[in-house]
Image (cartoon, rainbow, N blue to C red; front, side):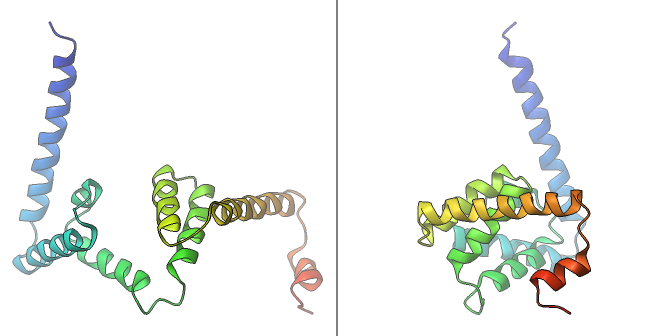
Length: 154
């Protein structure tokens, strides 16, 4: 027996189950929600050039709202420029940690014009924040006193 056959059968079973689950979830949606889901997929296709696999796995009922929130936060009315947003997200991703986010945020930061030094500093700032947080919590530094010392509070 070929060793790849059991693995292939397993992968095909998983793919079939995912397709059935996806179809069942979409079929359970009211017609207007199905239409909104399909319109969202088309919009993502137009914006990204494809519909990433993880988007197809996202629950159909919430995808339109999630996409709208993403567009609102990353649209032309955003107060934070794309480069800074990508650097912030990269710094957070490094702390979570999220390898998926790190890959995407690094690429987004570069695409938005961030230099390798800016990328490195963003991650290092996140590391320093984690470092000091560990010290403050571990030493049980009094928050009210800390605020008086550094935040200008009385």
